[in-house]
Length: 301
Image 1 (tube, rainbow, N blue to C red):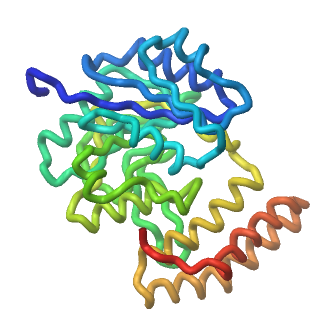
Image 2 (cartoon, rainbow, N blue to C red):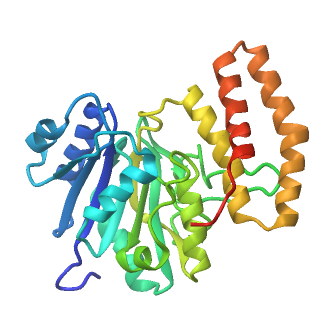
């Protein structure tokens, strides 16, 4: 149970040229935000249109911050974190929608488990409710540098209705305490988009904390409403940041294994697929993501 004086929770959402979706998020918070002590911060990441009036019309108490340029997922959320006054920070994608008691369930993890560093709720697909997207994460594969979500695509029959320590939080909805942020630091802005939450979780785990999955809290996810499910931008950052994550988070022997696999299997496969399908822009983005690493030394932030 929560204490008599509940801690302040700062909810941070990013908007980038997707005001309709962001307004839907605010409506869901207003309708299902049962928690009595929260502040709402919307960071606009350099959109073409100022979302302030639209957001305020729905949630007058919300705080709108205009960055005037696109700072990426990590940079934009860090602006929100710096402006937040809460004891706990709840970072959510704008293409998510709340369900009742989501915040209460996440806070329960921090109260029950002193080693909790970051926690994510269960995810269902918004357009296929009752179908699981996330019930935790498998570990990153040492060969491919990729991983998968536990339960993804399964009908929810309660098979993942138990609290678990997991490998990574879901970047679409993750709660972290101010104490942990002060100890670990902000989201790593070097990534800009994709893999930054995995890297952040690794940093949090290095400090002795654990990542938790809380099935009692549920969020709906519309998925890839900002970048699109397939775009050259997504191809570039997924490629670049997969390699970047491995360079920053695995030891030299494992990194060599990954690089050999990537060179012998991933590069030929992806190059062939993009050529066969006539996706020249994706092919350029894929190679651009690889070549970035020849010009950048990596230091841990």
